[in-house]
Amino acid sequence: MYNNLLHFFLVITLSWICAKNQQKQEQKPTTEVQKIKITSPAFSEGGMIPSKYTCDGQDISPPLNWEKSPAGVKSFALICDDPDAPMGTWVHWVIFNIPADTTSLPENVPTIKVLKNGAKQGRNDFRKIGYGGPCPPGGTHRYFFKLYALDTMLDLKSGISKDELLKAMEGHIVARGELMGKYRR
Image (cartoon, rainbow, N blue to C red; front, side, top):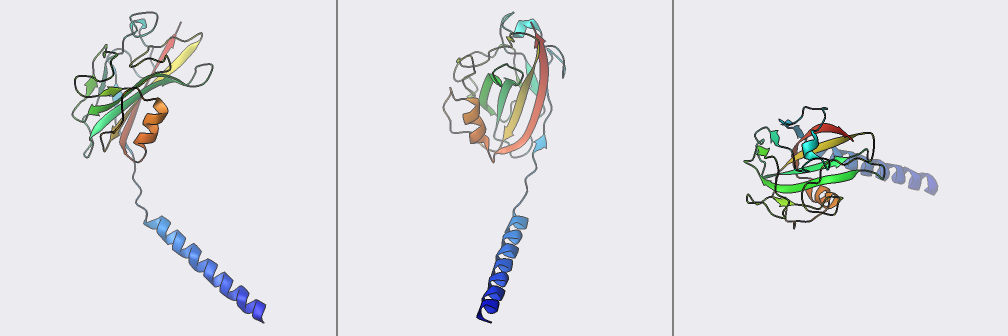
């Protein structure tokens, strides 16, 4: 009888704990990330990136445009990478703390640590600051320009990696957009 009573209280206690845990999970607010449209006058979504913006040309950043920032946005961040690289995703550009009132990046953003508007640039996989254009070893590669609207300015130094930026952005992404271009040598 003692074992039955102990078993009964154990089942009741575990049921109560599970119910409380479920209740806490249901009370967590879910924040849905909005979409933001990003485009370029240099190439269309899924189109070929002109060689001017690659290692075969001037190796300068393409012009990028996006919609006005949603409410609550304090800054933007942008990552450009190539998931088709032979050794894994190759990072071409990391830039963050782009002011919230910005709706574009011009062609040929200087490859310096801090821009005049206060935006900071990270390190690409060429081990350089700023943009490094497409330079695939062979075949057609896809290049994703990923724009993030954030609810904060990030307390980070220039020269950070993509992974460091992604970690710092966790929980701060209000909206996200993506533009994909291709290049083949």
